[in-house]
Length: 115
Figure (tube, rainbow, N blue to C red):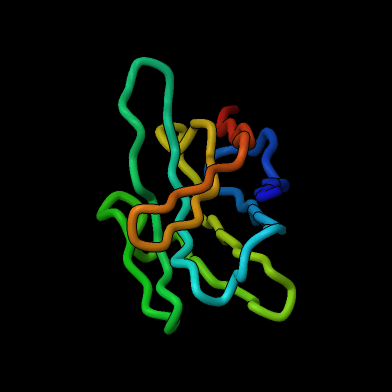
């Protein structure tokens, strides 16, 4: 049974920070690429950040220099550190594990950036 569980979302003011966590079980975590996606109301799902099994990272242009993705294979966990948050970052953030054509998803956690 594969399970990805996100945590750390919430309400934050513009300019604030949040750290999202995604814990994985039921997979050999170290051989999966991990990613964070987000979907805002009325918009398509967007890849925010990804990290390969070797630790290489990629970011959407909209979050470069503000967000940092990392993974801890010993804890089967991937993180997304979000700084300098903007209202347009408001979305449901979901964790993804990928290996070739295999994809697993968490249920998502709500991030709301508002005054």
